Image (cartoon, rainbow, N blue to C red):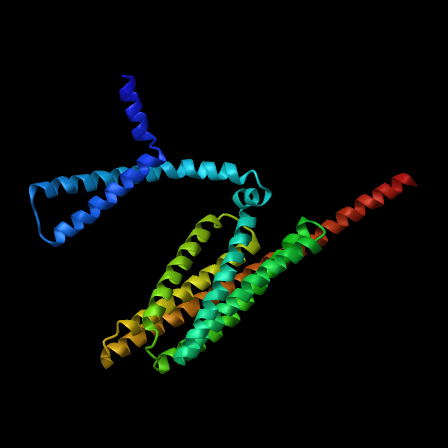
Length: 325
């Protein structure tokens, strides 16, 4: 009974050595199964190999699903021992700012890449993308810097919240104005042909960058949905705008790479790019307008509530003065 219990414990909680062995055998079985299927070798031993591959994949999924919470718990415990990592894990606002700083660095790098590609291929479209990503980086940096300054200059929580709303409004104005530049770039892209050099490199980089940004934007939308922090929402909206433009860049690049050169198909693809491009411009403008209007309403409410508190304070002071006399 003890040996059976030990075996069950090992299966439920495998060690690093066992995990390495299981993953290696599973990978080999899957690779061999794919190769034998491609060769059309349907022999009895092959079915046993299929069974090993299926069982290995099922157990691998089990170990990953059960292992992630344990790994997360260990990482959280280790992160709690240091001030920076503890804030990174426990403070969502701080974590959002830290990730925005990382996104700023990634945006700058991708803007430089597009700029180099624009020079090499003599493409205005790539140059416009480089300028757009650079301006989004400036927006992120502006929100982070503005938030830092607001914390230093605000005397209390109310003033800090008001300054955050002003940052939110300024970010909305910036996004709204920026989309006019993107609309001009989309128009240029539709009206003039782009060179085909470096397309394969651009396709790979655009796909990787687009999926990265879309994933990050979705995660931020889910996590920050219930948090009513204007700075966090500003960074989230910038991230969403970034992801949408990355989708457009990916679509334009894939159309160019896989185009067969047929004139009818090219016209159709340009119409598709136009619909996507101007749709993204309209959506982002809508986000900017919402930010400006929302911030204006909240700031107006604060101003309306502020004078109402003053008479109460004055009456209290008058009563105190009367009692003292």
